[in-house]
Length: 229
Image (cartoon, rainbow, N blue to C red):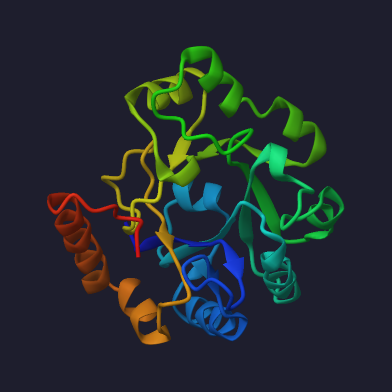
């Protein structure tokens, strides 16, 4: 299988480098992705084999600060995915339903009803969180793909996704996607404002993927949060 990566953004800006990427850096990163990868929606990346390296650009949560970046991709005719939290649509600092409907190249995937951590939930609450029937009436969401809030899940979560005919659960495990990737533990690389373009390019290489795995193991051994700064 050729190289596959899922790149995740949250906000665009400079107020919070841990959650935001400067707009000019974002545009440089997109330009690099275009030069190396075929950029596709996440369903295609997960289900189609390709002779070319493939990348998916994803925006988690649909922050209002990222709306301009989404429009930028629309203007370039670049595919991207937006992970939606049902109850956050239209709230302060999040895109409105009207704005989301304007997006031309977006595919929408479900990021749960209220962004509650799924691990440890009782069956009824877990079912409610992953039920997308209401949001499916508002926007054309991709069926069968769930983004775990904060990247946290457990075996019960994965079993229920399987029972509910979800084809994939997307994590925050910071690796490339490979043939060995469990479909309910799909890795994604979260990008923040501390990352230089040089390191961004490195992380998308084979050696960068090895580095990400080693850094993950090191943090686990030290008892550190692998999503931390």
